[in-house]
Length: 167
Image (cartoon, rainbow, N blue to C red; front, side, top):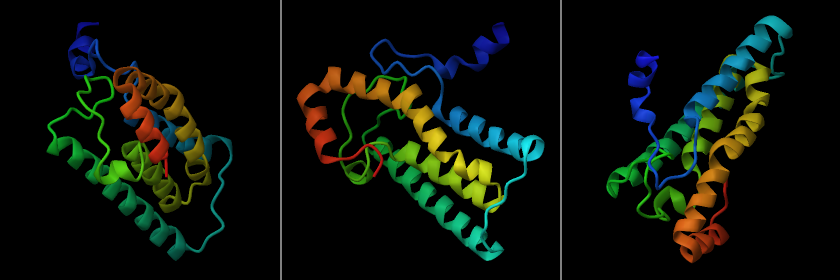
């Protein structure tokens, strides 16, 4: 058990933080693996697109996802704030990519997942993207929103009125 504790030390939640129990990237990886397993062991479902459309569509989705992730992490870096949802949040970021979407990192993960599904011609992974988005809402976003509303009240409420959760 001590090896697990030492390996998970980076995942220690702060007392003043959202109640996120599972690192969101692990949820994305889990859903992708689930799609790979479904493709291999349940029923192989391909996407009805020509190969070039799969490749270019995948590249576009992954590129947009990477831009969202980089822009989001850049905002955290600029204000020297920890991007992990289980860590202390000193302020609400409302500029840059956060003026477009309240959850650019999760949106980036969803776009990359859909891109992987396209590139691998795996309809399961592609079609599981909404399941990932629902799961991430249940496991992270709702806890983050509750925490931010409690901590920043009116400021966060006004932000949620101006900027949508996804797009």
